[in-house]
Length: 256
Image 1 (spheres, rainbow, N blue to C red):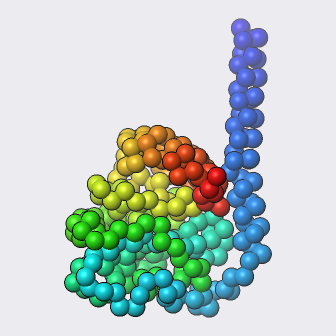
Image 2 (cartoon, helix red, strand yellow):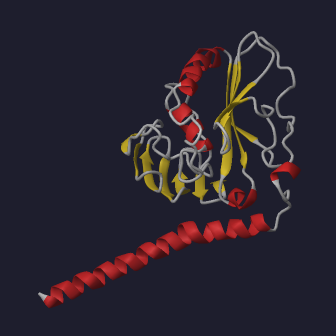
């Protein structure tokens, strides 16, 4: 009996050691490497010294003919920016010559509309468009996005939680996941996107795979258009053969 217990303990110790090595090489070391790069890059000293103006990606006055949907993201500020990005949604309705920006922030009432220019820098970090829909499809989807924004459950003061969520990326991810036919996603650096905003800890992913999550601290997505993603404390590692990307924690998607 004693020898069986000793063998079990030895096997458990070996498995624990392999697990710690996996975490170190897949999650911790890449994140530390990106932290070193981030720390040595030029950044504003504080939020009021940062650039929050338009990056000039979208026109000042768009043509009213088409409806448009954009999903933006940019690295966030401070040390958080070494690990995470901030995401938001931009809508342009047909017949209107202006953009509407929707996002969640960590101060005051979290859900904001047009707090910044649609394509503004975020803490001086230039945004990028991760998804774009125009024309008839955008026109049909915008009312559904409006409904999803109105129904977002973490929109009251005090609901925002910087980690593991619900935060700004939880908001955008929940909107995108809740609308059939939208087929959009935010980057793997969007910490908080895997927080279970609808309360489901396992089920079918919007991209066709299966997912399991433990409150946003640990999770797995496999199959469908996603490939394989492992979430550890908000950091995401994985591989997506469909987009030919390796997801490196803190760095994001790397094409191969």
